[in-house]
Image (cartoon, rainbow, N blue to C red; front, side):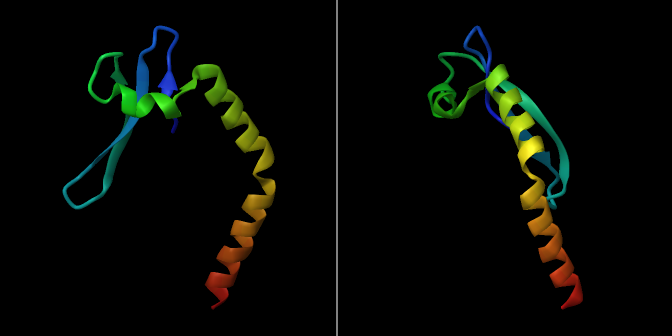
Length: 80
């Protein structure tokens, strides 16, 4: 999940909610407005919606080699 910078400057920052024992309950975005205390922290790593879409598409198209490496590693672990 990426920090998304909207046209009006609002940032959508990913947040995860976990239970007390650490289980994931859900993922969501919270909106951080310019002037909020955490805004400057998240701004440098934010992407526009278009940039995030390009990254997602590139990842989907270019991850074949990484997926093969992972599956080979997983098979080695299962054989060990």
